[in-house]
Image (cartoon, rainbow, N blue to C red; front, side, top):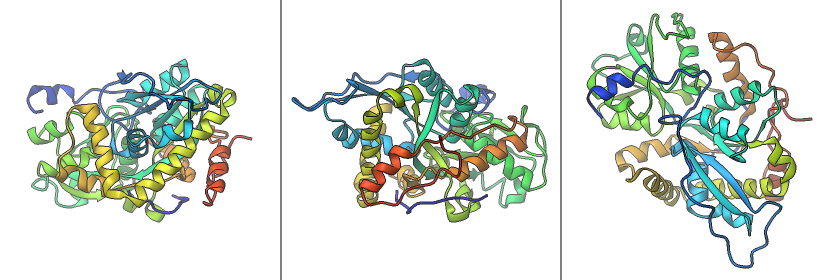
Length: 374
């Protein structure tokens, strides 16, 4: 599993739970939370009077209300992305699943999005490389196997148990299926049945399913992992430990090729904002954590408890590097699991504007692992 890296930047109960266990069967879907619905949560942001407008009057930016989307949460909350856009307004859109964000991007109602590697691959392959490009990294890590310590005490104890993942073929599902294969166990990728019962469960109901005993554990992103720990779960494995350099892509920044071609100045400005946001998060981790939590509260009505956000936040790295070789590895895992056919990923990255921004900021350029646009 080769990996490229950049500097580490620190970053309810009842029948509903049981009924929700079979949900979300779309292949190569989200690494995020909830249903397929999108939330067009605000009007275009106000811009400073007299500020110079770029080539577009507004840019529509999608993200998930997840801590693994810390760059988006903090960048929007602190105005760090808006500052780079001058007179071009931001119209943010909150999504709960990858397919809906990809649909919005491909349908022309979204310009730029923060999203996981599996939906990025799926969207690129389905359009035969014509609709999107990955233009930056955003986050690494923040994925854990959390279990009921009374039922599972060792990694070998996972065999025969019911373990949740967010969605069939999503980033965590693929990683868990690969881990199962490496243990020498067998699971049917479509049904999730086998030596381990892989239960595809909406992350919103996973904590309730866990408390009810409907599942014995979950391979999930933050903050769901830390919510399970707060409910009595134990971290059996941090996926970070399985990767060289302890890094793997969990969130990318993607763009519509049409928007990139027509408004490269806007895309460059957004990337300047994400680079400065990641730098600010690294320099101000406690302030950044509070900022992300404030944005989550605005999205969901209440902030995360300290016992959830503190361990969740510390396990996530923000990074400008897309960690391109790890995306290729995750794609290979999906092929190995039988979820997809071997995809042609050549051209999925276009890091030219990001590397321009990084060079201008005196930072090292990042690699596309040979998968860049020509």
